[in-house]
Structures are given as structure tokens and as C-alpha cells.
Amino acid sequence: MVTKLTVPADWKDWQIYLLLLGLFLASAVAFYIVFEKSDLFWNFPVGRDQPARPNLESLVGDPQSDDQNIWGAFGVVELQPSIEQAYGAVFATDDDLPFAARATSDVVEDRAFSGKFLLEELEFPLLGMMNSVDRPRVVIVKAVFGSTSSAKMSNANANVEEEISETYSNTMTEAMGAVLTYRHELGMNYNFVRPDLIVGSCLQTPEDVDKLRSVGVKTIFCVQQDSDLEYFGVDITAIRAYASTHDDIEHLRAEIRDFDSFDLRMRLPAVVSKLHKAINRNGGVTYVHCTAGLGRAPATALAYMFWIQGYKLSEANNLLLSKRSCCPKLDAIKSATADILTCLKKKLVTLTWECSTCSNVEVSGLDIGWGQRIPMKFDKERGLWILQRELPEGHYEYKYVVDGEWTCNYYELVTPANKDGHVNNYVQVTDDDPDSITAALRARLMSNDPNLTTCERLQIRGFLEAYQQEG
Image (tube, rainbow, N blue to C red; front, side):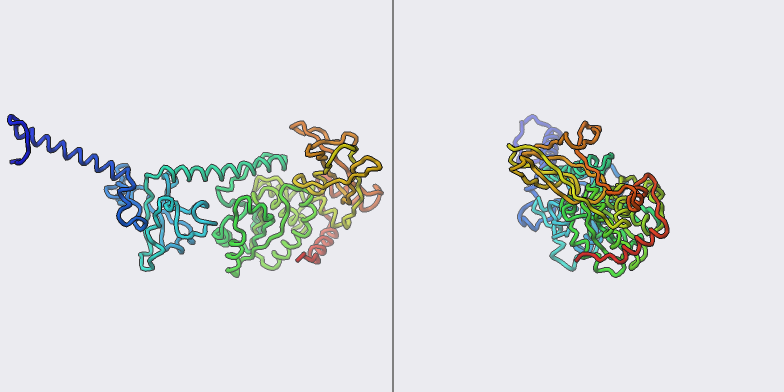
């Protein structure tokens, strides 16, 4: 019998019990709301040492899953070995969760796993794993719901990475003259061109070295510049340091400027010389990469196949394109081939711009690429801006930049308009004697389907083996 409860005198017992039941249910609902929605509930009294609050499903199970594991339907996903080694744990993650116990560039610098994941935003250390060496080897961490700001930050990071990749892809498409796409956020990608030769995108973490070792790679050959690596936040120093700890793989660099056909042409002999010597030294499978693996790396691989492995250039290109969609600059390879066999003759070219009221005139393109400019000198007596430059034989496009405005000189040679209606000036540098042996050789090598004679291939091989690398 209930006592000490003030109720109307005419109430029956069942009415009193119904009231008590209602009070109990209301208390249960209030507790659930506090449990599920309030982080403050879980932050006393130990504060920073308090582990992340459990999700209710971790206590009662996931009603939508047949899995009887108290950790729910997400299961256990083993992450990279370096994470395991750093924390002595295997972590559970899921991409659909608002936040997960996984490393991001905003929380863990350079993916070096300095001690916390996204949970650091909520002032939670990762279960104190760094403070105890006696913890079990396997610890399962369930990512929990509740931090809207963490979810937004994760989405924002993903959006930023996608925007960076999209900007690079658009630039690459415009510069290469073909629709090309690279998604850095999806990780390293590659294709076997031959059983002993792979072309692919850049390594992003030291763990990528192990991925390549697992497929027999003995030489990693990187043709990226430092600026390429910085754009995507790749720590090349960490990658090279990790590769150096293994005696079965070598990491080498030979820089070529991105989206620059002339730099590719001029650098190919030195780059392929270094590649050829490394392959002779290391054997096995060779991994050649640039940033996206769509321009410089395919061209380097093609030059090696053309000069060393005996392919016709068209045969090597067809094989490459059957394995990987890319856009190597064949004219750069042809020109580099002719440069080796004709000793790279140069001619003095003079460009002029008539304007006595301009304060600054520059030239972009030519042999320096569209990302750089050469200042012209003003001749007061003639009222002309003048640039003199020695150029190897070949076709060069350029534009003037007059007081910051890009323009053409319509008194000089002008290219046909491209698909966007843009035109450039151009100059064709040729041998003074079109009937000379070297002029005929260059003309043959610049044709649609060039091939090398046995003697020419031996001459190129000898040049590459004798080439002395700078530094």
C-alpha cells in the first residue's frame, strides 16, 4: 500500500499506481535526452581524462543489425600498419559517421599520428593509448554521434581536397590539350605498362612504399618538382627516409617542370640517363611517376622504351595507351631524340615590340613555359623593346605581356585560333641548310611514325651511359 502521498480522498489504488508509472516514464525520457544529447553529462568530474561517451547502441546493441557484437554493425576495420605501431591498436571506422577515429591532415600533421585523431576537437585523448604500455594489443574504438562541428569540419576538409584536385585537373586539361582528371584524395594509382615497368601517380605516404614493394618494385623514380609536392601537401622527405630503411628498393628524383613541353624535351636526356642507370643497377620492376601520372611520367617511360628497349615510338605509345589513359607529349620525345643525335644546335632569335610609352614588356612561352616571363630591354634610339635568345631547333609559341596585359604581335607569325578562339605568336627555328644531313635526320625523327636505326639506338645508349648527372 502506498503511503505519504497526498491525493484526492476518492482516488482508487489503480489511479495512484498509474500516476507513479507516469512519473517513472517521464524520468526515463528525461534521462535518455540527457544521456544522448549532452556532452556535459560525460565530462565530469575527470574532464580531459574522461573517455569519449559511449553510444547507447554500444550498451544495448544495434537494433538494425544481426551482429550481436556490442560494438554495433560497423565491425572492426584494420588501418595502416603505422597507426597500429603508433598506438598498439586496431581501430574501427566508418565513412558514414559524423566523425571517426581516423587521422586527418588538420589534426595529425603529415599523417605522422602525433597522438590524437578528430576526437581531439572534443578534448578527448584517444583512450589514453599513449599513456600506457600495458594496454591490450587490440582495442576497439567506436566512433560516436553527437559533434556537429566535427562532422562539418570533416566534410569541409573533403571539399577542400576535392577543390584542390579539381583546380589541378582543370589546369592540366587546359595545358595538355586533353580532358584529364586527377583525384589526389583517392590515393596512389598506377598501371603496369610492361611486367617490369609501371607508370602511376605520386606516392602520398611512406606506406605507399610498402605497397610498391609488395608488387616487386625495386626503383621508385619521381619526376616531380618540390612545388608539385607542396601543392598537395606530400611529405617527400618522409617517403624517401622510409624507403632508405629498406635495402630492396631505391627512391630517386629527377625533376621536370609540370605542363612544360620544352622543359620536358630539354630534361629528358638527363632524366632517362638516370633512370637507365638505376634500372641496370636495381633490376626488378620500376615505378615511374609524376603528380597524376598522366604527362611527365608517361613521356619518361616512352622515351626509355623508345631509346633503350627497342620499340618504335608509335608502338610504345600504343602499348602505353592500352594500359593507361594519359597524354604524353610525343613531340618533346621526338625533339629530344633529335637533340641527342644532332648535338643540340641553337640559333639566335630576336623578338621586338614597338612601343615608346610602355613601362614594362615581357615575353612568356618560348622555352620557359607559360608560367614564367622574360623581361625585354628597351632601346631608346629605336623605340623598341628587344629580346634576344638562343633556341634549339623546333617550334615555339609565345605571347607578349605589355604592362600586365597579354597580347600578340600581329606583325609576327601567329598561330590559328584554338577551340577557345585564342592565338599565340610562334617562331620556327630550323637549320640554316635544309639539305644538310642533320636537317634530314631531324625531319625524319619529327615525322608521324619515327623509328631509330640500330646505329642510332647504340649512339643514344652510349650518350645516356656517359652522361654526367649534375650534383
